[in-house]
Length: 137
Image (cartoon, rainbow, N blue to C red; front, side, top):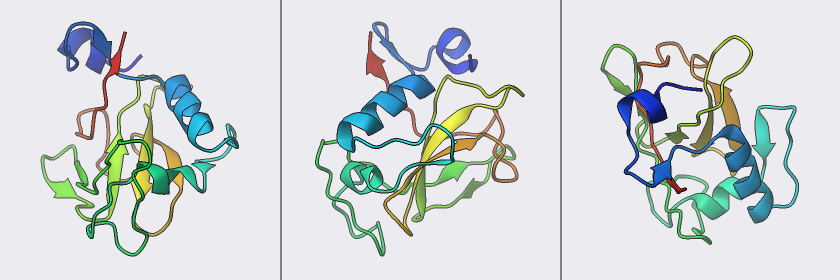
C-alpha cells in the first residue's frame, strides 16, 4: 500500500484513500465497460467525472455524478507544479509489482480515465502531490 493512508493520515477519521479496485468499481458503475489490462480504463467515463467548466478544453465534462474534477495538474517531486489546466491526477493505494502507485488520471484531450504509475511522467514519484478523493469507511 502507498504510505499516504496509514503514515500520513491524509483522510479524516472514518475515511480512506481508495484502492485501484475501488476506482475500477466507480468506473464500471459509470460506464459498464472497464479495461483491467490497459492504461486506458474507460474511454467514456472521464467526461462524466469532469466538472462542467471552461477549464476542460476541448473536451468539457458533464459532471453527471457530482465528482467535479478540475484540471489542477500535480506537484512534481522537486516541488514545482505541472499540467495545470490539462489534467487531474487522483491518488490510489494500489501499487504495481515494482512498488509504483497506480493512480487515475483525467486529461483535457479526451474523455478517458487512465491508470498510470507514479513515475509515468518524469518527476512524479511517491513524493509528488495529486488530488485525493477520500471514501467513507
